[in-house]
Amino acid sequence: PQSETLADFSNRAPQNEILAYARASALEQEGKIPEARSLFEKFTSSFKKDHLRANAWFRLARLSPADQQKRSLNECLKLVPSHSGALKLLHDLEKGSLRNE
Image (tube, rainbow, N blue to C red; front, side, top):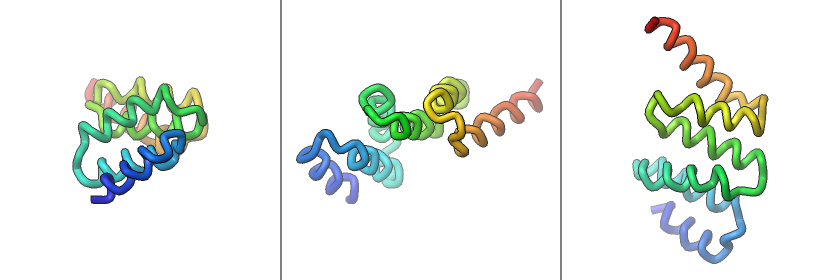
């Protein structure tokens, strides 16, 4: 699978954040959600580039239970206030919670 190939390359270049992010994305696409979620969670603190950390928070939110998504989305938006995916998901969550009240 693609995630194994990316893991091999990532191990050879551990400082390459984009490659590490691609590996976590491949794991998600392969249905290996716990592994992908674990990597994205790690990346929220280990990545140096704000936009990649923001993207990791966003992907973590998408892979998390509904009651944990808002925190991750807010962390994403602290780093990149204009993150369109986070803004949309947060809006959808808030719209859904208003209907349930």
